[in-house]
Length: 378
Image 1 (cartoon, one colour):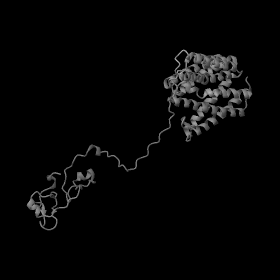
Image 2 (image 1 turned 90 degrees about the vertical axis):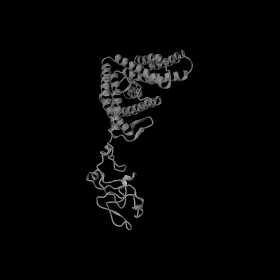
Image 3 (image 1 turned 180 degrees about the vertical axis):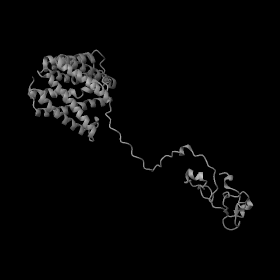
Image 4 (image 1 turned 45 degrees about the vertical axis):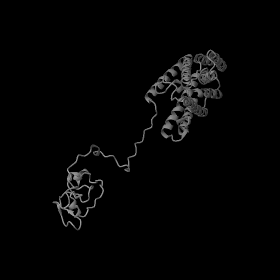
């Protein structure tokens, strides 16, 4: 600290009292006491105690009134000139231990563009319903197209993420043939087409080097079973006299199950169903899927299916909720293994075709079998 900040030497003007006994007190309005600059005078006086600087608590208002600020030598009461206030003191940060207001709760989000998802869903529904009740053969074509696109998405993701080259050409041709064979020749035709497709995959892959042959053909046979073969059961339902209504019931129950799971899980979901596979699914959501699907099943079997009863619909809805949930978890497992969120981007707000077929594919054979057991093959 510079000497000029300590004030005039002891014994000069502004001080009174004895220079030999007792502390020397500053007169009112005088400059602060400090160390003497004149050695002879300093020997005749007692040293003035000095305390360390103490942070000022008066704030800016004390500076403006000219009152004494704590700090520096003891007994200092001179008036300071007003000093500029730092810009950051205008908005001081809160004390570390000051209570902070709790953060505003985050609103739950669906994680997707709901408007786009609803629009695409309505558009797909119109195409499906129109083809289903106008010309059944057109609906078979819709199934075949969905199968081919789904196989393309699945094989593309396998190659990108795992370097697995499942042959797409025999899968696409065999998959479309599988759906048509199921509609024309029934279950026997579907099984024969499945076997021929698997053989075609084995033979097609032989045209390339042997490295990775086993994993490529294994993935190819899996894809043939997972996508076109399970989709063939939708074509099998369509062959009945009331096939259009059976397919409509199958679609409605699956959609209602997914909707119930989402609505109840979003509003009341707290307990995770399978956090390692799909963290967003909850047990409350599964309960909502079961309740929604059972009510819808009872109504559909009573009003849409000839010879059906409400209690059969309850069982059908329960089975659909279970199979749809397992199908959804199964594809979530595949996507987690591949390290992706969606299988594709073809459908805005939904992802890819496979992201919409995940619940439908495993549910199709369940609904077909229960319909045959309840009301016959038609």
